[in-house]
Length: 321
Length: 310
Image (cartoon, rainbow over all chains, first blue to last red; front, side):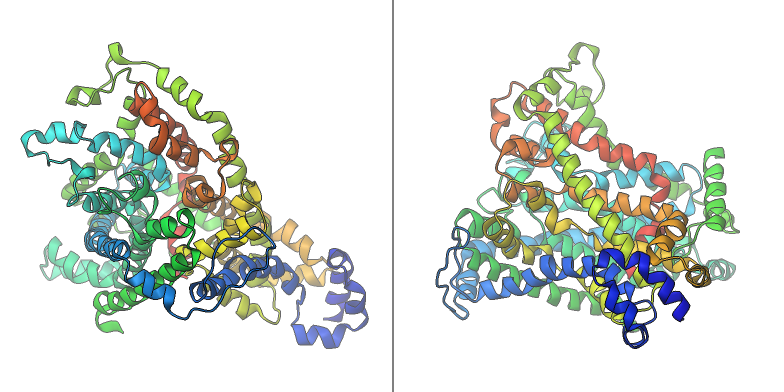
């Protein structure tokens, strides 16, 4: 023990700046901080980073949302009075905010079930084939690893008024077209995001599928269960923990929606029909200079996501809880 | 077939040499062939899926090369009479692709740099060092991954742009993403797989912790570094919202931001706006897609699964 510490410290202790006292009072300090107190030093940059850049702003967001907060030049001292729930009242009575929550609700109703169903089906199929497996797996990641800004370009091209999709649909093409139709804009955004993120969720399900023992399938086929029955009675319950995770992550992604309404529907158009809460945050907070209202909207959004996540966990998690 | 088998053999080989993450590795060919071979329906489903996933990318490339946008069905096939590189020239005149790529590269490179340096340190400490507060640090790392970015948006903007005056700077862009906690988790998982006796022996031999980390631990977890770099890469390279808020000066904007501004503001002024947009999109997409095709073996379900499940 003492050999380890006395030989370990002179070298690594150097950059720490304070190796001397540690060397003089090794035993007591050592035992108090654990056998390798240097671990604290190794963790320090990360811990400081998390506290300063993530944890502090989290509290700051709540603080801002309860005060009359506005932007000032750096180092200007101004009075920012506590206003209680005033910002929250402003947020909740804002029709644009209400509309954006409705929009994101439509988004989730389409996106979350579709994501779960398609990624499980495709992961299950991917798990069964041996040919071209690498090719398939790769083709599913490609949208996920590509910048949304890039893919939005081609979706705009495909979904425009006289785009390829409408050409193929001929007389069935919706009028007004997809992204400028107030009934179809949000569903189109939801489809886009489902398509974009699916590869990631397929990976999650692929990992989960490896945990289902093959004996279950073998004995089921001995008992004469067909493939569909096997899928429904073995695979679906077997990946339930992954399903909880996938619904949760899909919900969080949905709540973060910004790039797509900003670019795909030109700023939440038509007429706010595809505006997302984060887009409204950007509008109210940074364009119109009301960070306090935007912060309150952020808090409301996060509370909403937590509530939805709890409900989902009950629904998807089933009897295990 | 032979390709996939070689792939499997390689995977198996890797598994025996390298420390495995907690979740079992996808290992075809281990007695489950029977079940896998009955998948004609699966194969068709996957084929349709692959088409839906890949077609927009193919169409992006074709569209970026068209002189005039052709939205008919024939437009989906290369037409020698309608091919041009002019769209790339056009977009480059509007947004300077090289500068955009360079800015994206600096932004992404900075995030990867901080993530690898500090992530390896804390990942190693969490896995192989015993010290007071280790549980707290570990819990913190898990919790951080749950923090929703939309809640941080306003305070981070106030702090970084208004208080610290870091608008239009790479540091301001990098800061909120600087150390990727998922990557930290991947490092910790890989270090955890190494036998602790190895490190105890090295300590008894008098090696310092930094030297153990540098000369023993890191060489053993190289695949973890590739995985973590890939995971980290997608974030900043594709990120739009934050750099969009932080950079108003065009010469500092990452390509995703300048292309988005082109789409929302100036596309109308271009002769063939879609051609120019798609050309820019190809340039933005190409590095990420190429990287993932090249390193696809490092990006298997296991890595993601173990990193997200916690």
